[in-house]
Length: 185
Image (tube, rainbow, N blue to C red):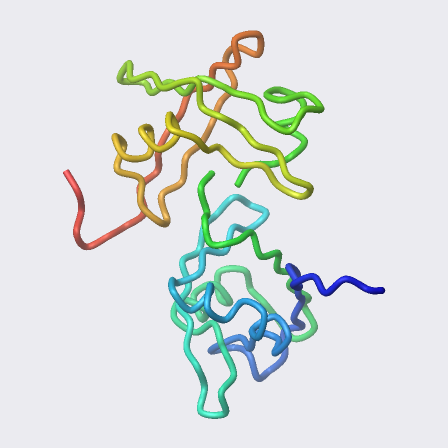
């Protein structure tokens, strides 16, 4: 009996029809519609740039990426025939982490490990849990929540982690803030 797993990946070829917006496949939309319509989407690209994009529903009921898509399209010089591959990481963008990095430096071959986060201003949080899943890892737990709250992380902010002590698993963190109108102080 085949399992009915939700599709987590999809691809799209660039055509002349998707310069101003990009259709999302029906099967993917059907499985994730409630989750993805709640918020705008963040595309994390292989060059580590983060692109906040907005959804819209077209007149024929198709879900499309539209707000911010023309800028994304232009920035990467997308042309007819280019292939884009998307992986859905779930509704929580926080600081998803590469599995290989987490396995090598934070958890080994266990499913959960921990690390300490350190800011240049002297702030320190830990132990922060690192949980490894099949295709991604994430930072989580009470200390992560405290770090996130105290540093006022918002959707679109990018945290850069630099491992400075692989024995005690200490990482320096630099936060690059997303542009936002209601800048928090």
